[in-house]
Image (cartoon, rainbow, N blue to C red; front, side):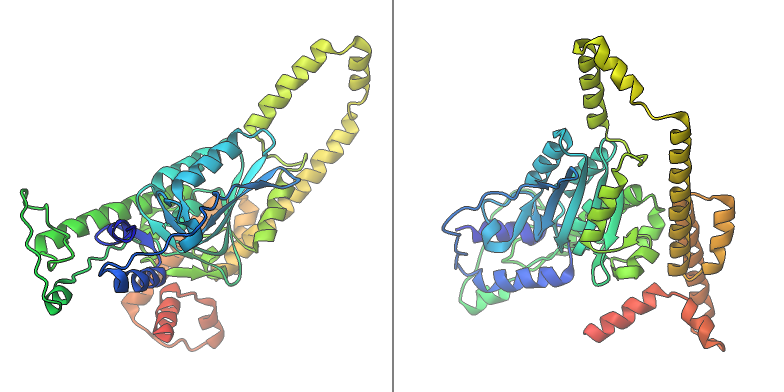
Amino acid sequence: MILPHIAGRIFAAPLMISHAKLEVILGVLTPRLQGEALPLPKEQTQSRSYEVTSDGIAIIPILGTLVRRTMGLEALSGLTSYAELSKQLAEAVADISVRAILLDIDSPGGEAGGVFDLADQIYAARQIKPVWAAANEEAYSAAYALAASAEKIYVSRTGGVGSIGVIAVHLDQSQADADEGLKYTSIFAGQHKNDYSQHDPLSDPARASLQTEVTRIYELFVSSVATGRRLDPDIIRKTEAALFFGDEAVGAGLADKLGTFDDALSDLAASLSPNSNRKDLLMTKTKEKQTVEAKEEAPAKMQEQASEAQPSTEDLIKQAKAEARADAMAYVSEVNELCALAGMPDKASAFIAKAVPVADIRQVLLESRAQQAEATEILGHVPLPNPEAAEKKIDTKAIYEQRNNMKT
């Protein structure tokens, strides 16, 4: 029976998964805890592998519930393992035909065990090749931990990110046992050996121990996201594991741009053009080696022809001016978009005039919004006399409280 093994990975273990998905899993497992086994698929499916586009972009799918190992259950329950993702990422980094990596994410999260090792691997990979992520449509909890380790995150208008939190569930079926005339007696050595037994109520020491572990994993989560997104850890904590959708995710600093998966793929391809400043370390080293070998083997005439084909100084100057103009326009557009999303469009001109880096601008805007939120909590909910001014203020916490109330 494979059910007990699955139950052991769900109950009394820290999970980084959206609450909605957890309820679905519990709804499937709980009725079967009296001995009914889950059916295995007739044929074991091969693990998904990444595909490489004509532009040299490896697309790695991060789909479904995330676990350390799948045990061949992908076809049954849509699981994706950290072990398989780690293997694909390593292959893509080593593959000289791959110039960049795009994480295609549609996942509610999953197990905490193994996620931070993979997140660190993604963060290290982006030092070698560009690594972007697209929330297509969900990147929650553990899935967001992986997305946050990429350089840039795209989220669609209906897509969501966040749920930066940890949860653990203990199943107490002692009453159900009693109703069926069953009584379990545990004989054990070691005070905490029987802490999380499903056949006994959760004791206070066991509850405290589990809470300590959940808090520890949560701090690892906060630190990982803060490092990947270059944000203050307190800003991450203030999200309170809420979900952020579309432009709200960008305004909160949890995503970089509003766009579809295709937008992310197109922009990543454009960033790899010859005029781009982005460099692929492995490709560069490979090309340098090939160039040296070619020069050693090629006759002098071919080297002279290659020298004559070099662009003129005038052409290089024109190209440099065009690149600088394009970079400036992109910078202005991104600053205006960030300030507008943060409800502070008037700050854009000052940032642009001083050429403040985008990462610093995002940090300033987030801190300003945090200060506004704290001031609002102190003053209370006072109606604004000017409706237009009210619309410019963004209260993410109020938005999500209202949204959660509507859902319930």
